[in-house]
Length: 350
Image (cartoon, rainbow, N blue to C red; front, side, top):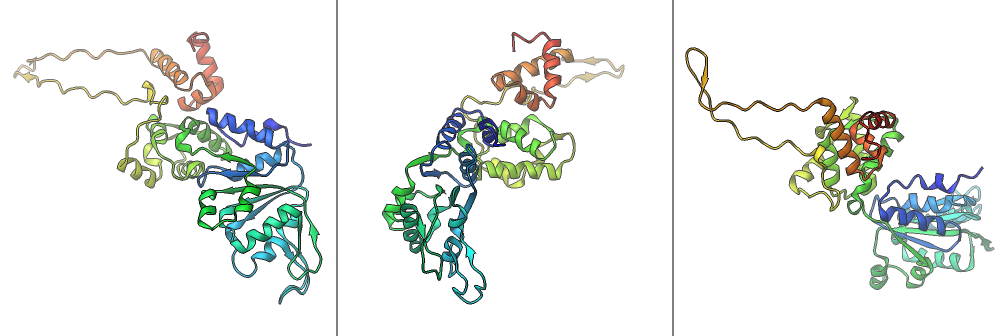
């Protein structure tokens, strides 16, 4: 049974406006066979997007062609295959990646790295749907959908002469530009919860850990965030993550270049550090033991139930009513959160 559209799109985690728009485009593009060019920084999930487009209809094989590895004398045989006896060691015929993609999708990863000599041959395949294996005398046919991806600016590469203009226009029918994680940091809590579920553990985290994640630039994007979660799971098997569990490279970067939380997603009051209180004037003690001088004010005590109620309200305000994420930030289960909402009569207020 083919997976539903909703199931296919679950791999694209996030509820930011840009992610929701991307999910809608993936659903539309998956129902046609136009070439798609996916642009984005390293780690933004270009292959995830390509697979999601393919999985909308799940039609045929999905074959990844790593263009950055297409170097050396065997690069053409990897792409187009070869016949028996084509060269020393070719004891049997072998199908290339293009042939394997017939009837499905060829994902041309890092297309900007493909050598010029192979670009011309790839263009012919895309135009004529034909190719010739290394050492072969006859043409073979292969019909497939093309999805290409790169972290380079292909338009600039064309102007420099590093990429064929005709191939660029053949691939650039529809362009998807993936947003860096630093520009959609509101998705960070959703991604963290996703990776924790993937690895089978659901630790809570100190407020300062989430604050650090929301202020970090994430140069490695979603891939770096997943690596960060893996690192914390490896060094801390307890119930909660602490700031010292974050990778040292991330802590060093935060210390060198502090960044304010993204606009509209400032650290909520429940995560803010307590204000520093000025030290009281010293009290002078007589030999009798009685203190004189300035008397200290009694510290007001807030009931724990009220603190818990305020924490829940602030978490829901911070997540804009997303109760699943709020429960994750509070370190409690969703069922527990619903019970607390009922207990504190926060149904309408939340």
